[in-house]
Image (tube, rainbow, N blue to C red; front, side, top):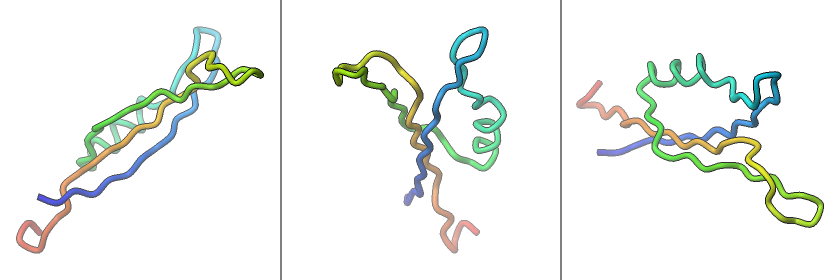
Length: 72
């Protein structure tokens, strides 16, 4: 089986209730297009000394099967 991939970087927003991603509707949409989340990694921001101090977002990687002429 062959796969196609894409990635998305998401930066969190600081809202009154805390940090939010805003991914709810978007991630359901890509799921409906047969994309599957296969990996996520936190995006860590450094402070002025170069030391990590907090997660500011996510790097997401998705995959789905590539349609072959036989599948189409």
